Amino acid sequence: MKKVGIVGAGLGGLVTAALLAKRGNRVVVMERSPILGGRSHVVSKNGFTMSYGAHAVLAPKQEPLRSIVRELELPMKYRKASLSKFKLFMEGKVISSPLGFGALTSPAISGFFNHMLCLKQFYQMVKQAPAFPQTMSVGQWIRENVSNPEIAKVLSAYAALSVYDGALDLYSMNRFVELTAREYEKNEPLSYMGYDVLLGELQKAITKHGGSILCGKQVSDLIVEADQVKGVVCAGEKYEFDEVVLNVPPKELGKLLSNPSLAEEFGGDVNQTAHYVFVYDLMLSKRLRGDIGNLLDLDGGFYINDYGLNNPSSVPAGGQLINGLKFLTEQEQLDDSHAKGSQTAFETLLHKVYPGWEKYVVNKRIINRAMVNGIARRTNAKLLPLQSRSVRGLYLVGDSTEGSGALGMPCYDSAKKVADLLSSTR
Image 1 (cartoon, helix red, strand yellow):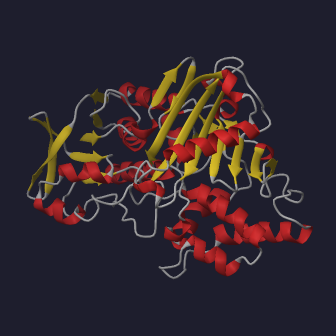
Image 2 (image 1 turned 135 degrees about the vertical axis):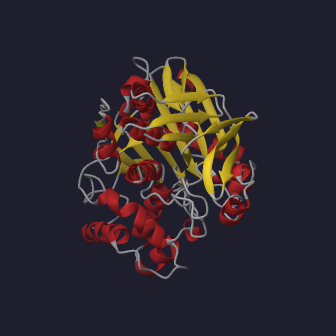
Image 3 (image 1 turned 90 degrees about the vertical axis):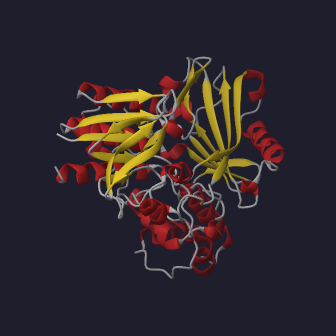
């Protein structure tokens, strides 16, 4: 039995802790915040349940999440997202998606031949082996391979949605294919389950198997002796561990690098530029329409998720929870100067798609720059390794790691891989 310290109670840290505790290790999770979940912590307001970060767990039937749910015996319920309710917004109208059931009739693309060509080029884009020139971006690939402007516009929008970043000329085509190919291996809709359920079940799995979670515990340093991790320092107190797992973003990692070996190994990772999106959450007392599950604005770059439709338990009876995202350009990510324009543009979109929405607003939440560091993986992003090369017994998990997958999946993948590594060295 090992004593494992896990710094950070984001999804990566909690999944790692639950797996290790289930396998018989003594696990202690130390979280600086009074709440769990990191960027996915759950907020309740006026009867609505929502997450600070993304609003739902995507594709729980995909690996490694499928194996995690099975091993931890998590009683998960999920809903299949209807592709028929995935819509596009173009030229002032809501139209069917050319990648859903309306593939051959969507007015986003004209002509039967072009519809078939769109599907062909879409699957070609996401299924190719990642063997492109290192400097080739997604935007460059689309310009060089898609001559039809209608198809190029649709594929650019879907690509931007997949990586949570509108600046596709800064995003590696190799990385894009690597992260997105697995999403389309099986012809089944994405599924959803609420983070409130997942966080609660992970907490139960940890404590049920003897693990503990300590909130309000900010780790200030690592204890390293002879290039072997021995524990952590928190509020001047030493906590001894056989192994330590870090679930912290790059900038927080920099605060734990007093050891010269670690400072040299990770020094280039800690000052990377964060990536941001504009978030507009709208809580309505009345459901205005139910025919849209997800809406992608091809002109304005907005994405709307009717979270209440995908996860009904998050919304009081008769209400509606709409989550809006804008994929900020590189320039817009620098500061909040875009905020007023982004809010106005989004409300204009709401007036067209959900007319009368302003009469039923229970509450709004606007975040001018919500960090999605690690999810939006640009060409020049350096991903954290899963295991330190310079200090034995030190591991890293989370969205900023080399874990595979897109849209939050790296946190599960890295957690599973690190738990397996620790289990194999018993």
